[in-house]
Every structure is written in structure tokens, then in C-alpha cells.
Length: 366
Image (cartoon, rainbow, N blue to C red; front, side, top):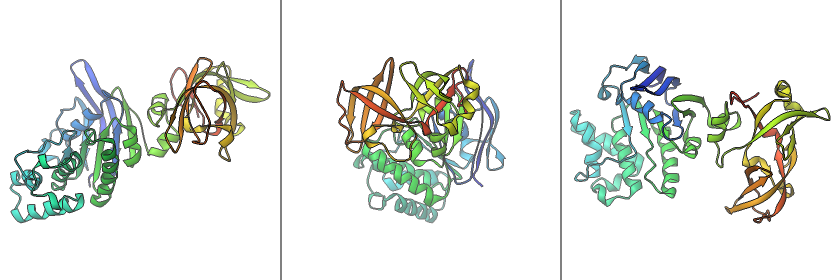
């Protein structure tokens, strides 16, 4: 059993609180990603789980065992860091086997584990090379192999892809997902990159300023963020936000953003009745803003004018940066669109996928 539980975990450094009573249960064999901006507490949480930091309050459990006072070497975890931390004078084989030799693991068992891990990671032909003879991606795989041979209950990964170039990051993301499926072991992964989180995680834990904001599946986080922070952090490009007021017009509820208005679908209006006349934050994702000429079927459209500021042609889509009055926003539009800098254009907001947030609490209104 390799579940992990954070039970009201607090971490303080003097007067500074890095973790504010974290409560979270990570299921056995789950791939959980801790994500958030720099300084949010995600690496601190991982280090507390590893035993590299003492906690100031609460409990950490691995399986059914409280590990607050258990030494890192006895927690049956393996950690992969951003730095590969390979021994330059050792071969790949010896780097992977080193920890097992320290534990006085029998030689035949070491050979079995190293061979098995090398096969999983595609390192079979590189076992006699030194780290300086390897690419960045290969070195990262060796660092992963060194963790795999431990056969731990839990893998901890602290931004392991940060040193790789863009192409290698994409390849290694896929390899890590495949690795998790093969090993059937609990993975706890830390990153500031929400794309990494969305593509690999079974569930994502979003953190900000030492507070756990929301824990959910990638799709649910994307579609139903609990608050303004999660909505803005998950999704690339980020969700557009507009200061607005909910008003009634022609028997309908309308989001009034000052320089434009948008109709709230009737089947979604009920939760917002209590907010009529009140200030709110209106959110809509760039992918829910369309060129009227290429509007997908089945959406609930509301037309909004915009002036094109900048366009980024990506091949499969265009990212358009636009303005409307004092509002700046962006849209992911069809690549056939003829949008150019300075053009006045019409856009369609898909109001079926809109979001409304309480201005004071920043919580989603549902």
C-alpha cells in the first residue's frame, strides 16, 4: 500500500509559514502533480514528504504509517531532482547501482534491477558510458533509472524536466506517463508548468502561497475551477478576465463589462440571480472565442467587437491579442481567419463555457 496522506501539515521557517495546514490524500498508484507558481510551497511539500524537511505541525502518512519521525532513508521513497546529480567518474551502470551497493544489496539482485530499469528506459546500450558522453535527455533517464532500481513505494519528482529543451520535454513527458503505467507505483511530481501537469497527471493539486487551492482531475480543473487563481493558472493561454456587473435586460441576465455585454444562457442563469446588480469577474477562455466565419456548431454565441493588437500564427491556430475599450483579451481562432494588426473585427463568445466569480471572495459562482 503506497498511498500518501497530508493531514493538516504545517511548515514554518521562523515567522514565515510555507505550508498552511495542507490536507490531501494521494491514492495508491496515482500520478499526482503539485503545480503552482514559484514560492507556492509545492517543493516544500515534496521535501517534507521525503523527510528532507521537518514539519511544524500535522502528520504525513505513507500507507497507514505516520512518517513524521522516520528518517528519509527509511521512508521507502525515491526522489529525482531537477539536477541529474550523476557521478561523472562512474558509468551509467554504476550510477544506477550505487544506492543499492550502499544498502549491501546482493550483486545478482543489483544486476537484475539495473538491467530491468535500463530496459524500461531504453538505456541498455549505454550502460558502459560515462555521463559526459550522454545527452541531457539520456542523463535524465539515468537519474530516473537510479530511482527505479530502488523499487520504492513512492516516486518523488521535483521539476525533473526543467533542464531539457522543448522537444525533449515533450518526449520525456510521454516517457514518464508510460513509465508510471509500467511500474504501477505512486508518483508525486512537482512542476510550475501547468502543461506538464495537464498532460501527465491523474489528478492535479494547485497551490498558491502555501495554500492548497483545488485537487481534481485535469479536465475538471479546466472546466470547473473553484476560484479565480485556479481558473487563471490552468489553461494556456490563460483565461480572460473582465470586471463586470450582472444586470437584467429583456427578461434575460446579461454580463455588462462596460464596453460590451454578453447574454447569459437561460439554462445557466439560476446561480446568478442573487448577483443581479453586483460586481463580478467574468471569465472566458481564449478557445471559447471564435471568428464568426468559423464558429463551431452547438455553441451558445454572443457577439463582441474587438480590435486586433497582435496575431501569432501557430499553423494549426492563430492566437489573437485584442482590445475592446479598456479590456485586453486573447482568442485562439481558426487558422483560416484573415485577422491583421489594427483590424476591427467581430468575435463570438461561447457563453455556454463562461465563468463567473464573486469579486470579493474570488470563488466561482455555480
